[in-house]
Amino acid sequence: MAKKDKELTYQTAYAELEQIVQQIETEEPDVDHLGTLVKRAAELLAFCKNRLRQTEQDVQSTLEGLDAEE
Image 1: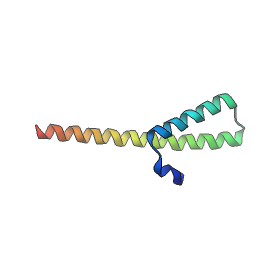
Image 2 (image 1 turned 180 degrees about the vertical axis):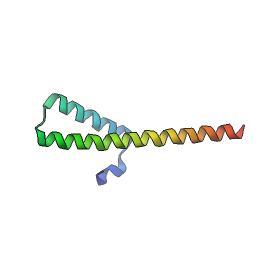
Image 3 (image 1 turned 45 degrees about the vertical axis):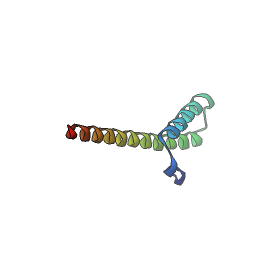
């Protein structure tokens, strides 16, 4: 992913994905630009999936910690 992605959040990645989908649906980009858009969308999807997995693990760990205290 690009250097600027170090500051990427789930919300901004999701918003960018929505923009890419809208652009593909409404503007019908040329083949070269379409390839770039699809590649960026794949990067954003991977980021979002990873972020969701990490959040799920964090929540699960917290819940397990609460159960252990009981």
